[in-house]
Image 1 (cartoon, rainbow, N blue to C red):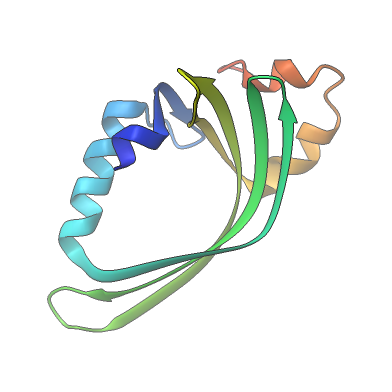
Image 2 (tube, one colour):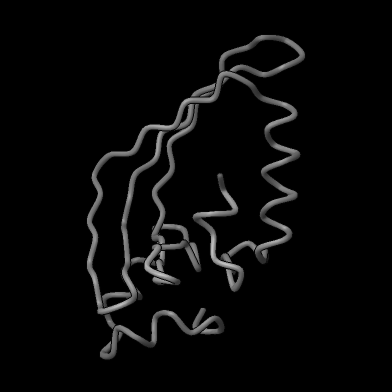
Length: 116
């Protein structure tokens, strides 16, 4: 499923490209199960075939070896590009960089990989 929503040119703030992200998720899901993901406070701005989504994500799950309940809350800025009539995530930034995004004059510049 992730392969369908993540663009092959994906990059994130933590240095992961598409292939590294897929390996990271594969590893992550080995350690946790019963994962539930909730999203709230979404703000989406569309620029033709590109979009920016500021979102709050809550993750809950169980640590596989101990059955300990885990939970986390993160704020992210997601960048989407439309490929073959389907929206795909092309980039992710932590929310503290959101203020920098508001200062950009040309929204298309936000999608350039080496901006931050």
